[in-house]
Image 1 (cartoon, rainbow, N blue to C red):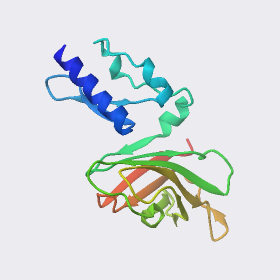
Image 2 (spheres, rainbow, N blue to C red):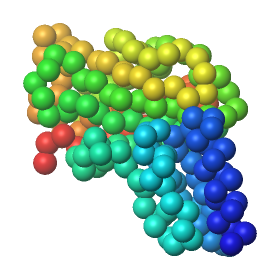
Image 3 (tube, rainbow, N blue to C red):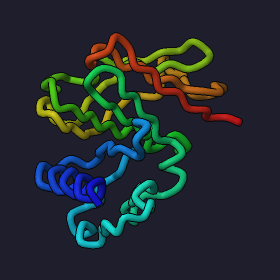
Image 4 (cartoon, helix red, strand yellow):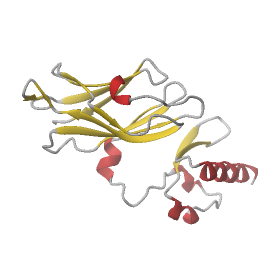
Length: 182
């Protein structure tokens, strides 16, 4: 019962402060798991019954399996960076990545586009053209945008993978990779 009350206190604290992902202790050996706190209207559905169902993240209804498979997370340093490509399989002129950065110790005042490069396994690379998100705070979400063409050629054509490299976000380099042609 003591552990359940501790979890309830932590969840309450994160609901009040607006955090969306928390890590909770799983057992006495120090292993932990992450719990996604759903949107505000879903909070009343959370139940602290003492069972292990908290091990499974509760996902908002709008999240689909494909999006979950594409999401990558890097938790180097004091910042957790989560990246989900939004249009890898579309013929848009841009590639857009949904990015969230969470920390409790540093200010995230930066234009993320300046620190982000997209590469392919064929050696092509592009600098991000826009960071459409706030430049400050401890919990930041936004869109990172790249133009798909370089010298008139779509850099994704013929590539098997793309690599997003983000530097200087409380770690020298964060690397996120996706297979785009199987």
